[in-house]
Image 1 (cartoon, rainbow, N blue to C red):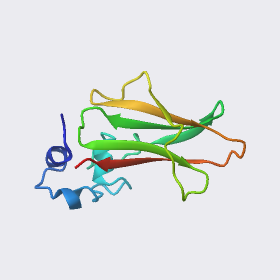
Image 2: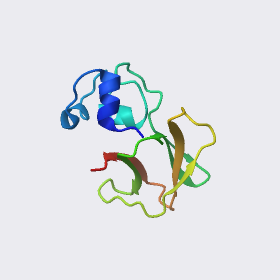
Image 3: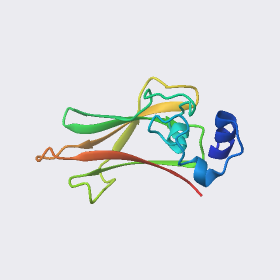
Image 4: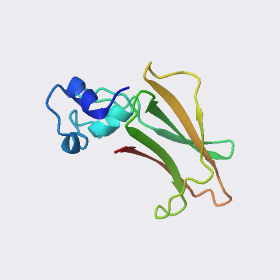
Length: 130
């Protein structure tokens, strides 16, 4: 399995300090290196190809995102909110989409039912496991 330090050393090509390297945005595309690792993108070439995308379909607020299946050191959590203050994972259902992104990743669709207010937000949090 892959881990961030090994990936950063191979992808960025330098001695890597995990705490600082994870927050750096080597290619200035708005994704820090931890997210480049999590979405399996190239940290030295700006790209928006693997950014999470949200949409509404059939009464559900949905978020599609690319997830590394070979990284034992990452946690992906989808949560929702009505007010951007209180966040919950209750009711979030995830499914693997049929087309793999790469050999090391898969596309995930997370969805939560919309309520009558139709005022909901959804987010993805990626963190490292210690």
